[in-house]
Image (cartoon, rainbow, N blue to C red; front, side):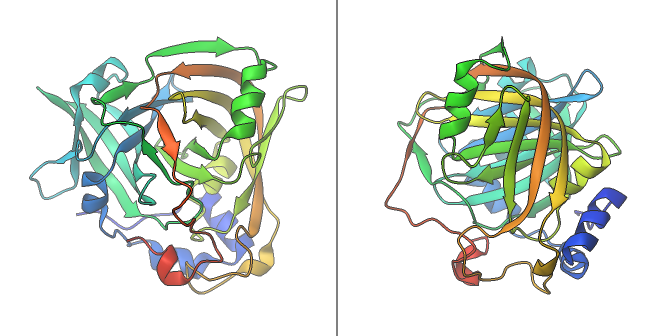
Length: 312
């Protein structure tokens, strides 16, 4: 049984600034079809603690279904044993089960445990999310299961690869951590160039579009500042990752509302800005199976109807 979300002061402060406290309270006990989304996921993104204070990513990709659900009263996800090379268990873990092609995603946060033939993620928080801001993509072939990254290589903060990948990226993942040490990972999507990186100033920033009103990631940044951002190069299956300290600035206090999902006149209405001071960067090779963009699939944005935005 998944317990309702309990918002820490950082999240409450951001919700109050945005006028979404009542929306967040409505969503506190929302779960949705997490199990179905997990079975249909072709990508799992994990945020893990590193060296006591930082964060790092591990990913699993392959043809669905590769996530198995254990037969238990609570939500337990069985993940491939190959993850053991990337994880020291037991450990707190932020998880995202996702299908970029179907615009489906669900957060599954909890604790990873080593088992005889697999790793098991025992959920303490789980809920499905809306379909907005995806850039639809599919694997280029039905390749075997991959656990990545295969190699992590440090990058200078002014390395041209960072500007190249960040400038082209339409799909990224933001890892943050709560005051009690629980990692969290969230999808961030937008048109090429939505991630703005200034290598001279060592600053990464982007506009936060209107979301569900919970502000889980933004609130974590307010509380702890710890962040890592993974930007995918889908064609190669590689990625770059930037690590540092971030903060959230709410720019639209007038967007308060009573419902989590609202149809807007804009595709990507701005709610705020995340600004991060970057201290190090890495290139991650073979982080997932290469994917191809699917342009014929309509993108779901805030201008889409509410039924189109809802998890489905």
